[in-house]
Length: 323
Image (tube, rainbow, N blue to C red; front, side, top):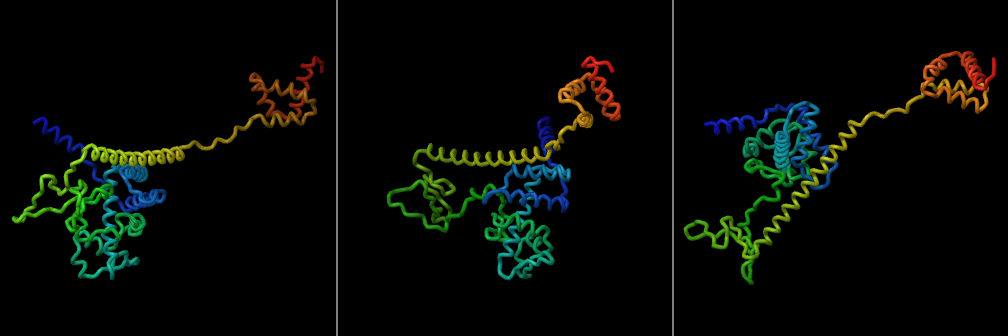
């Protein structure tokens, strides 16, 4: 009973706080991704560390308290919307009305759309220009988009594009005159009863088991996995360094102007008094000492006559002359 209660409490505590996104927050998010994408290389894909940076920017701008998963879901929502829009615009006869911000599509075609596509394409589309700029040329572009009727049957993930399994039943298996090749992927073998059967050297997925050294395949997989982690680590380091650089620039202390000598006017007035260079040095050394700080302040505010009288009195005392 106690263990079950702990599990329930843990599940409740792990739930994310529901956040309602306003239109200006959504537009800020899309603009942030557009600005970030401008400085990246061709074929760049957004990953978790980039969604984290966007979440930090949103929280600083709007104090929303969104998490990286919530930003990721919002980003994928607009990416899936653009797939539907691009697929509709790729068909002949369809176009986009920029005045009403709506896709012009025939009624017969609307009847064949899935519910999400019908709701999206039959009313004004928000952030059309932002989605077009952000997703054009990516996997969400119209040239790579899926059919609107089936696009929601498959979960979309930007990091899993290279791991999709394709149906190879329509291809003729290659001939192998020298025997079986461990890289050949045969088609399913159907027995007279209509059920698929597999030879002993094939897996249930139709992939042939390798008869060679299993360490070669294992090493190749480890190398590919290590390379993928290395690339991801480099991207994360680059993003972190850029974030630190921007933070340092934003928090840099203001330029401190050069300190001004408060007694500069006193030294200038001493230069106008007819003295020899040696006498000026003696007077300057005396007034520059730490003990004569009060005297310097007094002479700065004294009249020219008082300053002249004090200088000559000081020099006479130094040279032992009687006034």
